[in-house]
Image (cartoon, rainbow, N blue to C red; front, side, top):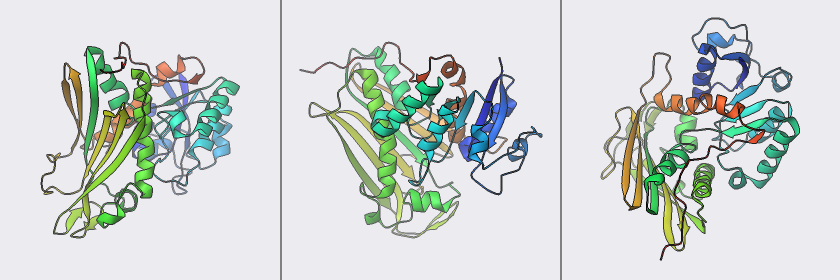
Length: 352
């Protein structure tokens, strides 16, 4: 049976999803929601280099809610605090449409007890399903690293590092205003709005993984380190002045019994010559998984971030496909919040 799918938002991830839906023989595009007035009224195919689909983009949420559709691929921005994502998701679910979101909902109780209650209630009311997809958070710790623990006799600590070259970001609002590159080092701290927004994502990842591992987290420690260089740094959206932030290491450490048991580290780099910095990526981003225990294990995964023929980078494609590939499993699941379970994962036990 062909599934009728609505695409919600057309940023980099949403555009990749929209192409996948249009190109699929098993999915039918039922609607397209956009935030930009300039895109409203355009044919969905024209937005992504495809032929006309007969589906026109709309900025009218009520029009989307009224559509006859099975599923919504929700790809709204998660970076800015002033959003209506939870309200929109609840409304979509209550309209009878299942939702797969790449916005931050990896562990609903950690994200917000109120959002958890509302989303579950909406699923129950309409018989719909909700699933949070994503590459990291969403996959690298919760599914990849946790899967590796099936080979473990003992696990002491799981570390996942993601190293991302952000110099190619073309939106100054994203690179500077949101991520903090080009700012003074003292402006980038665990108290900054940016770090708080990002922390929500990675703390959810930790708690989702801990749930799979039957691990009790006593607390999560947060830290950020910055790096500067003594010269201007040219990036895609402009120039980062000498002495301002061109590199950051953001970290979250789950503590159990006084020990670090899960550590997430995000390396953001905008310059190729930061002293004592990890290797530069040459258009790739790298994920490193380290499991300390018996046996200790390591896994390095590089994703080519070069744009494909349609102009989508590998990182955005990976996030988009985590949602698209989940569609059959989500739709085959009972109504409610759909969480992928890892088979045979390590179960934490108190260490002597």
